[in-house]
Image 1 (tube, one colour):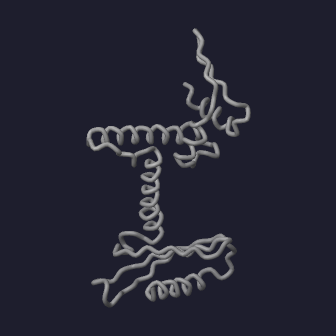
Image 2 (tube, helix red, strand yellow):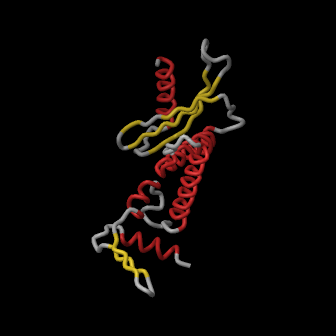
Image 3 (cartoon, rainbow, N blue to C red):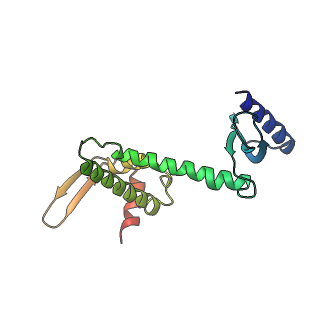
Length: 186
């Protein structure tokens, strides 16, 4: 804890010097060289993101042994660290499509179920990317799309010539549903 406090104090000094008259929200990245006496065998670098939002400070720290020549502070944070977090979020999203339900004792059955989950994720991701582009759900999580776009009540009538789907007029997202439907029509 004392180590974190000293890093925070150093970040505060650097940011105070750089951002005298800025109004929130703002953020800035800086790289701080550190050397610990006991726990690490070599010097390391702390990339600190000082972010000040309307609610207050939101500092972020990345401790790395990558040199500034390899990764500049902004590139390391945005291209490496944020990309890793985004990848973890996509893995969590797939869990919403029952990838965590591998409930049989037979490996082939669990493997097959995982394939179906991956296929479902790929299809919903394509739907989000292609059909929901430009809507308020363009960045929505898979679970939100599944809940609000797929799990809806409708009356299905089948006749000799057509299949008719009647949705409730009270469905709150019918404009987004219609936009997605029309975007997917060939």
